[in-house]
Image (cartoon, rainbow, N blue to C red):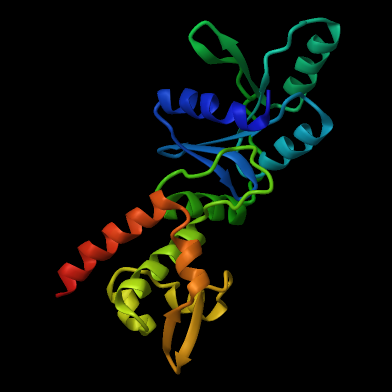
Length: 234
């Protein structure tokens, strides 16, 4: 079982308990929020040192950190020792297994309640990233693939607007709801999608037009956003 195969059942499990779930957020495999509750889940194909290091790092953001792994075929002495280590580290455990009805997730135990000093800056950045995303377009555990971040979504929206309007100023783009980061995204040109054609005016490059359209669900939302704001603006 691959890490990416763990993603959807764990996401569905958390959503069934009323959480909003996002994958691959600020180095966290899965982030789930419900009101003031914040859960972080780290995925691995087995419990190993890398997983334990990652999971304990996440405890600086949230007290509620789980690890999710495939259910073991043998629950022997080594497995019982693994459970002891996870409990000592105050981590929760979710097991994923294939059942007659598909992939099933079972909670073995919750993290032990323990109040740690939180890294409020990292926690705030994580929650801001979740809030600024329009949806969940990533698969947890993915490697060597382009992740959809709030920044990339914002750049796609700007690209979509430029494709409709032609060369425009950041002020015009912001009037269409591209946000306060519009000028920074255009000038930084992190993806190579934009070019300055004159002072304070930017156009979309051919690369930007092609790559911004590559994620169809996000681009479709950007088109709907443009249509709604363009009509309202007129």
